[in-house]
Length: 134
Ligand code: ZN
Image (tube, rainbow, N blue to C red; front, side):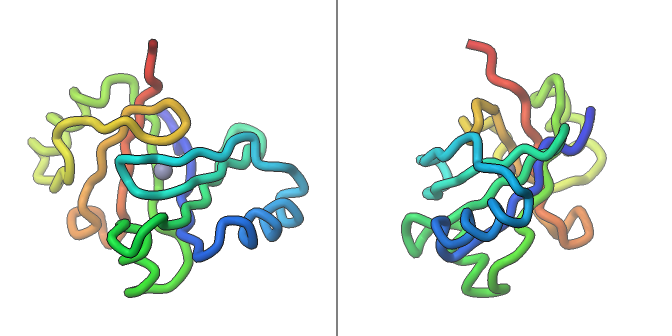
């Protein structure tokens, strides 16, 4: 693990949340992106070396819609940057963590991503992400 890559925040309305975070962070999102694999639209803000990802569900079946139904808006996941996502998946699975997708998925912001079940990390959904090299 290198660093916290970003913090993901589940929001009901991306437009409205963008307006709030523009004022809060005093900057504009640098990217807005539809992520098919998760059924979400995301926007990314950069503050120094850190990033905030806002996520809005595109359908009621999206994991983000289910999260908001259960827990309301708020912090959804913490993403850690890794150099070799497959090696990290193997390492963490070997340590007893529950990996939700063993096969890395194409995530937002040009990343390969895999998630760890919150039950194995004290209630926090963990995202591993590796930069995609084309
Ligand atoms: Zn994320």
